[in-house]
Length: 154
Ligand SMILES: [Zn+2]
Ligand SMILES: [Zn+2]
Image 1: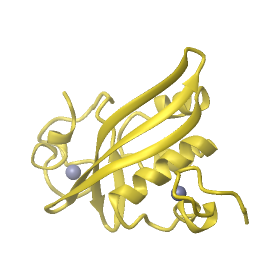
Image 2: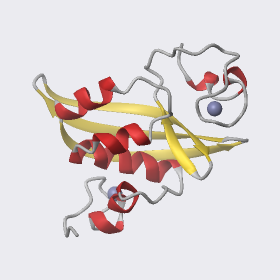
Image 3: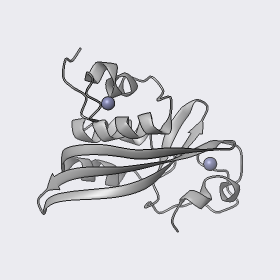
């Protein structure tokens, strides 16, 4: 058990906040997942970042980025639940970090999808190896083009 404050900025103890999700409990909403992923970056929990990214994506870049950065803070601006089946959501946030090039801040509107009670981050920067008619990697049972394809930038 840890008595440290959660790095996501909630002001509560890690064990009562994102640590709960890191331990395996499903995050109840996209915003909670996003916060717990930020905390996982801070704490270097690469396995958690991999486990909460939409399956079938390239994972190598996750661990590289996490290891090279010092995280300074997170502000969640808004979250929008879009509904549908499977359920998609957007979370808008600003993250600040420090690396060998100095201090950075990055504002992003991230996409998330929920399947079977688990939320996943849709990483729009990865190269997809699947076709538009393939089954969607979120395991909704729908074709990719009808499901999560619209949340990728390419
Ligand atoms: Zn937290
Ligand atoms: Zn999907």
